[in-house]
Length: 68
Image (cartoon, rainbow, N blue to C red):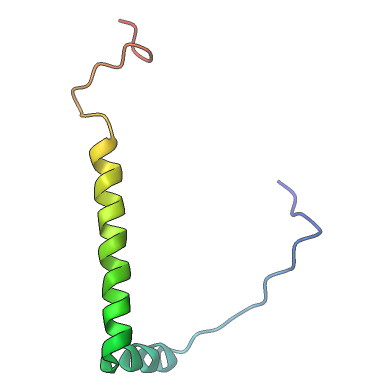
């Protein structure tokens, strides 16, 4: 599929491990930020659990898709 010419072209970005670890250290040492990140992770986990619970079971007979 050809690229949409109206979209901006992505710029090349390089991440240094030291910068990433420094950012993680700032998050880990700030109680407010750590609490916010943990809430995001917990909410995401809950969404995944809800989604998985809504999927049909392995033994489900889906007559619409499996008429036999």
